[in-house]
Image (cartoon, rainbow, N blue to C red; front, side, top):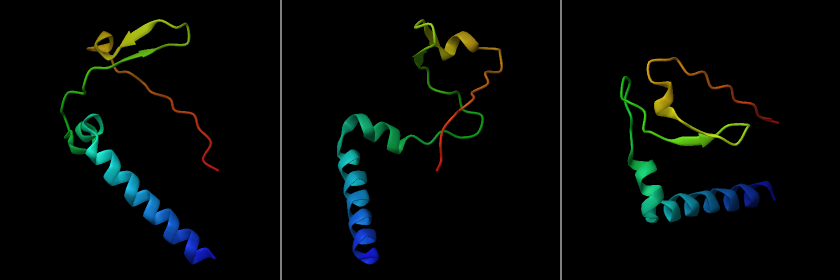
Length: 72
């Protein structure tokens, strides 16, 4: 039973990777390989107040990202 679950999970994972590689929007993320010292691509996110904040607004500053999550 364990082997069957592992095999099914592996097959689904491989299928998902190949399916996402066929999507042009996902392909840019799969092929992009930023190096050390490269400029981060620009993006905009909403803060807790709902205002949009762009990465470019932090130019010259050191942004700190705090990630919370449950890894259990």
